[in-house]
Amino acid sequence: MRFHVCNSLTGSILGRLQVNQFEITEPVREQGATANFRVPISDVASERADLKALIRPVGSRASSRAIGVEDDGNILFYGPIIFTPTKDGPHVVINAVDWKAWFYTAPIRPTGATFATRRNYTATSTAQETIMTNLANLALRNATSGALLPGAPPITIDSPPASGINQSLTAKMFQGESIGGWLDNMQARDKAPEWYTYGALSSDEVTIISHFALAWPERRGTMEPHRLTWRQGEFGNTAGYSWPQRVIAPSRVWAVDGGEDTKIWSQATAPSVGVTDLLWETSTQMDDTKAKKADAFKKAKGELAKLTGVEGQINVTVTAETLPFSSYSVGDRVRLLVRDDWEEIDTRASRIIERKMSGAAGEPTQAVLKIDTFDDKYPDDGSNPGTAV
Image 1 (tube, rainbow, N blue to C red):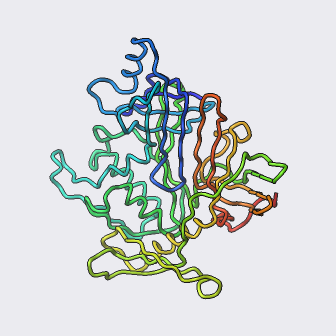
Image 2: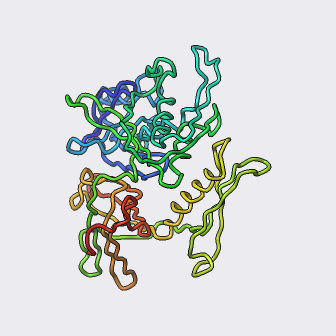
Image 3: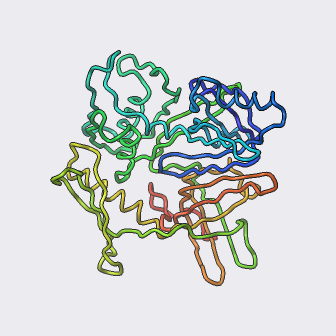
């Protein structure tokens, strides 16, 4: 693996880090990947000065530099440094986030050279993927010329897949916190695209190009599920499993408009309520200031589907030697078999909703995969591909 340092405004590769330890956490839907790198501090003064100049030149902010992690030509992580690198014993600690996090810092801004003209974004019965790419463009580009805004990262917006589903949205300037928040508003709706960012090496391998992308019906790198097994006494191709921190999964979600006097609301309830399951409720607020009841229902249904899976989450550890990082992506599906004297889990298309990649000197390079065992079918055709393990 190679750890590149890049110019955040151009993507140009400026140098490489000799990393002793790293950890990258990549969720499928939340606010982007985070990364932590530990780089040894040299005893040679000139080498220490070179490292300082590489990761944060004098007079610049920490975010002027970005880190790209390459594995055999594939970029596993790419995004800006977010804090001033600090010393921790014999190491410098570098924290970075992927470029998805940048969209949570970008509001819907007023237009004009002096930002004097109000701007809102409104779409009525428009393809949902068009709304989301339009929002990304609002974050990155001048509304009139289409030119990249001064200081905005050079993120390429990929052509989105067609979903065949129309949505409506009214996003007012400086409301909803950020454009990333409005994108999440769209993503949380039933049968909506997932949005993410990724990096790719340029053909001459001197630049890392960042991309904004949508995936529909879901983000994944392969159609065929990966096979993961753990059997007591036989082990299989995984290094073990554990249960993450337990979270209560509600059986009803209310979506409300968030006003002092609630005027718009709707709910989604699991069909098992009153049959086998207890009623357990929660609520979520709508960001859209002109939301309709149908929008509230879509938000409630999407949140219920997302929260239902938390009770079925399991962490499975795999080594990079067994399952190379570049051979799969977060969002992919797995055929999972776990069998010991307590657990017996056998799924056919469960989804990887997070992976935590790590490695260190003298330790295995591995990933901890958080798998939602309740989400056990593809959303586009409802099938369970492959056969039982």
